[in-house]
Length: 193
Ligand SMILES: CC(C)(COP(=O)(O)OP(=O)(O)OC[C@H]1O[C@@H](n2cnc3c(N)ncnc32)[C@H](O)[C@@H]1OP(=O)(O)O)[C@@H](O)C(=O)NCCC(=O)NCCS
Image (tube, rainbow, N blue to C red; front, top):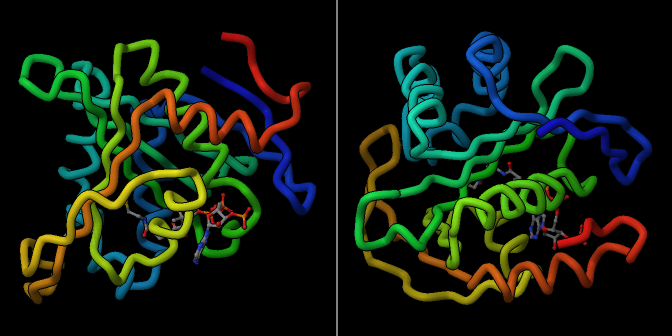
């Protein structure tokens, strides 16, 4: 997919599929995040082999990943991870990251909208997100979109420095999320289907 979008402050961005040519821009994007924030990420995004694996997951159908571009700069990315051959094949796991200077302008929500459109086409019926309580913005966004809190699993994960944290699990059926997203956009903005 490829789509031009305007953020709340009038900045124009392109939302499109992630390709191998985005690897360097993606590396630069993660390098610019604050180390404290990177530490809470599930994987070590400072490693190129990890970023290469992200692309393989897309190429082999285990993930739908989109990037948000402001000119040549990658300013946001989001993924729905799929498990096509497992008992949670109806589920997609959402992850999002937006560059600090592009936050609170509606980009996270636009990424979720386009990711869900793609995930629905692949048969995903339920969206799940797992994160640490310290990642408060994602919780705010998901609550705003009507997601439910499923669990807080005590000490279940470790950050990139090895410190243990609780893990928050939130979810939403695609139909519920879709309805919330639809309510947010005017009928002119909202795509058919
Ligand atoms: C979470 C994140 C992607 C949100 O992106 P964003 O572009 O700022 O989000 P939006 O501007 O679309 O915000 C959508 C809604 O989320 C909520 N929200 C956003 N930031 C929030 C915050 N810091 N605290 C509480 N709620 C917040 C608001 O309800 C907002 O709705 P509104 O704009 O109508 O008020 C971004 O803050 C980020 O990259 N955080 C660090 C990485 C991270 O923690 N990722 C989660 C791993 S799964």
